[in-house]
Image (cartoon, rainbow, N blue to C red; front, side):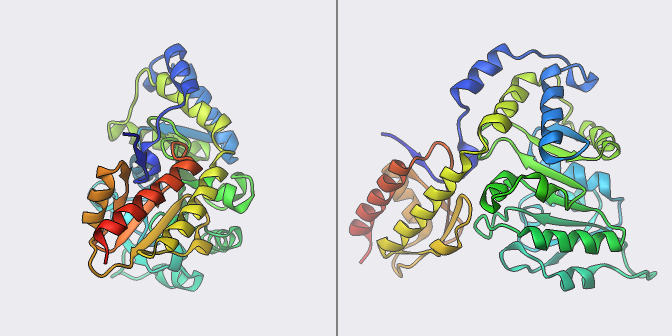
Length: 347
């Protein structure tokens, strides 16, 4: 049975070109700075984002934590959106490892109001922690891959600079944001001091993320990577895939966005899902189950039996993620399966 996996873009398989590149990659010990393929990937990533330097890290979660460790000091506070990945899904590393307190702010579709950010910046007071960092997320995962506008990012940057604060971007899917905005990713990165982005989601590498910033920041970040156990040895076998991701996999992301809009429209037509097709800007579709007798977890199990894997986030909420291994024909087939399951299980 063929599997249509809509749980996440983390499930993408490497391309055939990546398998060849892994087998022939020139390698060395990256902790010594001796891996030429890693060095090439880092130089390419820095150039793509318009920053001075880059650091290859095992995961996006580690990349975000390294950025926070590098920007802040223990006892400080960071401002971030209350549904952000850093706050919701990174195991409290901000507090436990970095020793930083969080100041979450509600932001519709991931966009904290500028006045709310400004109000959250701590004044000098013996009782208060010191604000050390502002973090934003683009695209915003929980909000269905929503995109922060460039003008909004400019305003965040201007506020941060006026208060002498750094801004970190959790850009796990920042290339999706750039494609959706029709702009060069540099135009997003220029508004922040550091960016973490993933190679292992829509860009299809098997492992790895990148952290970019100025040279001084990355030099400090490299030591924090070592402290966290992220120092890699012959990592060129992985970095070779990352190079292909950056050179060959970005432009095709628009296909995932088109398929996501198609899926959102077709889900709505089934009569058991509520979606907002017009709100789908990238590769993530949020859906609410509109069937009183149905349970999302039970429905996901029935779909899995038919070869369609989906992510149930609660009893009524689903998240569907499009990626290179799900074609337009796969979307149509998945909808057919959902309609079949609906006939058997919904009144």
